[in-house]
Image (cartoon, rainbow, N blue to C red):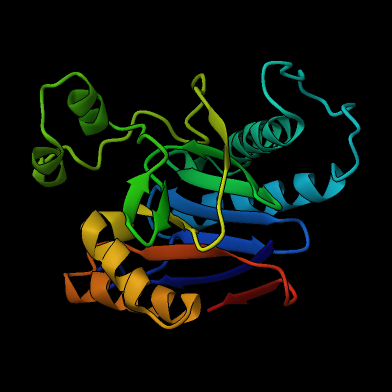
Length: 262
């Protein structure tokens, strides 16, 4: 199976700076979206720390060597442990940066990251950055937001549509760098040819309905065009936050892996 990916990040229409960061590394099969919190010059620092630390750790653990400085979780596969450890190390790095720079005490970051190996995808996330799986028939969110409204939906108190419009929709319950105990979500799935995996910050998911995301991706002639069209739709709908999206495509073998970032 051939893996190809494209990604784009955009400041949106309201924010003065872009606190999102993304990482696409087809050689490692690593794709990351990080959404910084804490205001200009703090959020962007936090999200940059996240993508840097994840990329560094994943590149250092290609060989199955479990001698890293964190406990190994035997209940999840090796790649799940790599992502879990990478996120925990990112969390520690943000906390350490805050200690050295107390003016950044409110900074943190959400993240969604995946490792791709053939048809196997390992996902990890913290916060409300999301992963979706798309196929010719529809779209399915495969991560569950760590947010107040997501908890209310799960408990049957709010409907998904009410959650989208709720004044507390941006209140998250988990973030890297907040100094609390993290409830990291790690999962593994098998993907099929012609499916698409989409990672995004809430600047996309909060501005574009799921069905519209699917329709835009399904209609686009390439995933590169699809990332561009999604960003433009989020901007057209108001662009209230920074917008970041990565699309990973899975095609029959025959061409080399490819990656494109903008």
